[in-house]
Image (cartoon, rainbow, N blue to C red; front, side, top):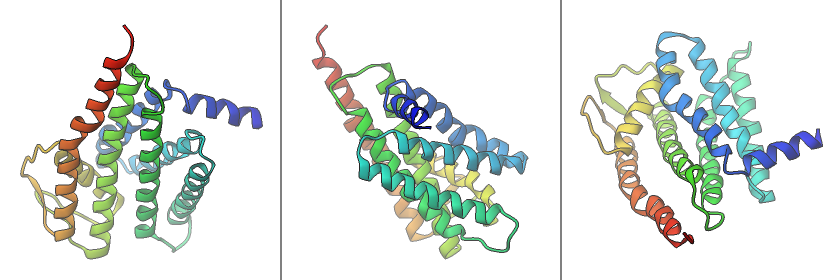
Length: 225
């Protein structure tokens, strides 16, 4: 068991792990929303892969306290999901998503630390920057879910929200549209809280290339040829 943990830590602390994380995030952000719209199994698959993403965060840091926090949030998140999808009348939907947001924030911190842990820049680090960008979109979608669950109002337009897991399809779409500052106009924020989330995502989307990508380019230029 200890050997397996060491192998997992060695893998997730390495640059090559950025590729595996990218595959999981592409599934969560782009592929699973399509499956969720046409099949109920998509919800279960989404939860499995999302929890797998957060599980990897436990092995992706050398900081004991960050590892402990990540493990604690993963345990709480997993427990809440099992309660809701188990054969019982209990559900803590809002708390689930709040914990998921906290988990995403910690995972973002872990990935940023991995991204800039030394002066090295390679293909894997560029992939790592893409992962951070997709995690920001995921956090935006989860935040909108909480806003809608608490207030009953979040986004409007050509969308019908049911208060179920399938609403994630619309939230991740709107989150990505806001982050990329595309603004198609078919879906728009209605409540003040949703408007602040949208403008925050747009601001981050503009600053991300200017700060993160520029930093990577700067580090690459400093490497000996």
